[in-house]
Length: 233
Image (cartoon, rainbow, N blue to C red; front, side, top):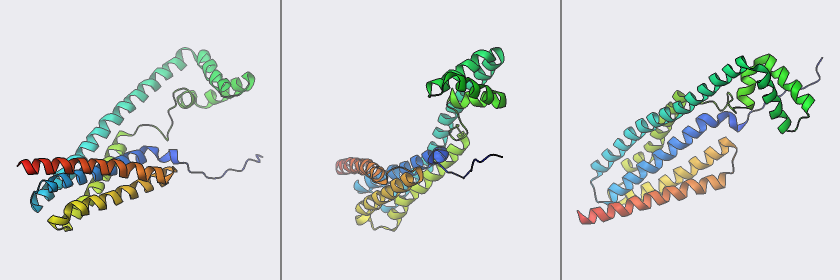
């Protein structure tokens, strides 16, 4: 009877697929919509036109994120499938060479030649393609490309992120809209950076400073452009 004790473990890498898409979508939703609202409001636009611009940004941005993520991750998925098909053919044509290749990978990781050959033989006997996919191609279940999941996650997170500054603009008076949206959006970005870092097991301080810095820069730039064009008009 085996004396090995198994216990459940959860690692941040298991969440990398949806976490990346969610953080990217929400961050983009907050920054782009808040920047647009601040820029349009700085140009002395009406309350209604500002809200219309923000709503258009939410809808167009969510669709753009979904399409972009789907196309991008589909390309990654196609590459993974092509590599797996090529590897499967190589395993069929020359299994001995592939066994030697896998054993050499384990030798490079620190196993002696005899043990590496034994490990490679046993893993290939169970599932040769899976062994080569994981250790040669670095493709695993946790990191495999999932286009539909990435597209839906990005669209939903963008819409949620964009809804935050848009909601603040809705309830703010016109003369208070720029500082209200800017300050609240930076707070939202800081919270997003902290939550994303926590979910991924990364330091929160760096993540918070990173997202707020770039968000502040984007809003400052669009506010300046809005004031410039508003003054010209």
